[in-house]
Image 1 (cartoon, each protein chain N blue to C red):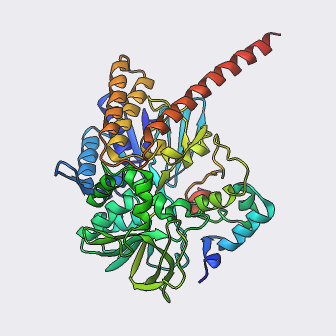
Image 2 (tube, rainbow over the protein chains, first blue to last red):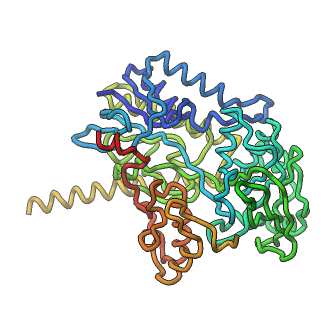
Image 3 (spheres, rainbow over the protein chains, first blue to last red):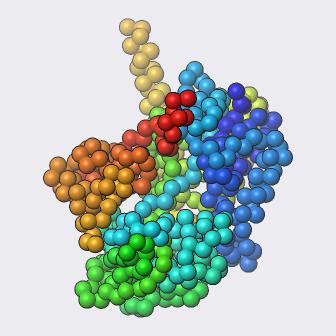
Length: 415
Length: 87
């Protein structure tokens, strides 16, 4: 039996582990990847103040700190299932089974797919996979590629690929259909980029926002958006083009790129072939909450947070006794916010383990999380604050419903 | 390859067309769409196609239930070898 178990060794999980260990808890961290750091490992970008944010360095720092504090790591270990019985959580992995009264799910996010004809060919990968290959494994995903899906994440990774000497022939849209929806409509894409413009790590996006203040200008911007696109670090960003097909015999040989109108409809006869040897698809991130679901945790769908999110409060407690959540499982945000949430979760777990007088520290940690959110350079959804409020409202509603049903049940018992 | 022919569920080889026509014919939920076509029921447990099956169904379903995930998750949530499953 361990005092605390943390699933996920990303910024949230590692920070929680350090926090718990500092409070004297025995901590076990489990992660399915062979190296600690999670999505932090792939990050490499220049901050507005000129400093470089190197995810590998940040991960190593956190990991070493945790190891020095005696945190026990089980990497390369996938969790298959979790169960609670009599207040004790059982965690099933392929190798061992663990037990704890206090379990944190810091499982992060997963990438949503963007289906394009030919997307099952070898050489097609998610943009996150290309990032891990390049920045973590130091293997080029190819010599020349195309990224399908224009968003904050794909723009940042395009730049990272460029830094590694991989040519990005185009950052462009998927052809619109029932599954790609707004990701295939130039106006919607431009709109979402403009919302994040003041903090996105991209001069293109920053430049764009000053030009286009209102909807009318945005519409103009899309209509007159140059067919060849706008270049950012020599990468053409083509919002008026869409990939209609990925072609190749046994592997990717190229993509068919077509001109689209402002609503995303293909202009027939405009198709051209772009030879490339790999293709990245960037459908955005959604909270990876499988384990919360198998545990029976209540959920709520909050678009601003990226999808279905397990109910939780500001102390990172879920409605299930001894189950905590932190990081992108609670909504898509940057690594620094995830780490701040991890600290709060760690403190809550220490409190659960019987440590007294932590209320002040927990309160400070919650405030620190909000400050970190306000100062974030990258925001994945423009209405993240609204999303956070929605989930807290749902938490309150859930708690008062529960109280009401407890009261009515006990009344039922008396009569 | 035409758009309709593209594979959405790789494990069970279910095409976009099959999902679209099934959703239109039965006006069904994501769960029903999954059960009718087997999309999302393969060995990966729907890790690749879940969001797409959800979107194809969502456009034909009435209102989405916000309080529970539309396609159930079931353990094991990662593939396990027979050897380890048997102990």
